[in-house]
Image (cartoon, rainbow, N blue to C red):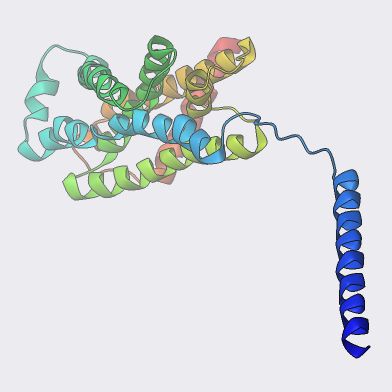
Length: 262
């Protein structure tokens, strides 16, 4: 009797457990949410590679010509060849602008070669427009480098000044680009390059604001470099301080405004 009852109980437990398990599985299948997986856009690592990293690789050649500008301007001060150059019947503005233009030509060639090299690893959409934006970005960089070189006394001072200047320029280029990746808003040459690389919709305002900012800053930096190079105290010494130069710039701008109003 004991064995019979034990077998009946075990059989009943097995049947009931099977039914309960089937009911739980059936209820889970009925209550399973309708989840649909969709892939929207690119993954974040791919975005970083295609947009930010490629753009940063493209602007690297812009910061490889500081030594060339230093040697062409500061080197002539130390070698005393700048005095004979100034004594020639050539306007000083032509000397500075000629040096800057020579560097821009070399930079344009290297940028073209650099883009061909990068093309072997990464596809560059809208390559001609990206190349033009890079060239426009190079003009204020060369102008600011020339400005620092004209004001410097020697190689050491010029090297320190250009290093600090390039750190500031890179910050102005890269920080807005990183903010653009997270917020999808902002302006700047690197952001414009990223938009062209990713084939995003670009408005006329984006192009005009970026290009106008690059042209304006380039004109300002080159004009200041020419203005400094035309001063004998900058070329031959004793060199005035930065605050004194700023006061001189303010006075000259005020004089120009007064003449224009008259």
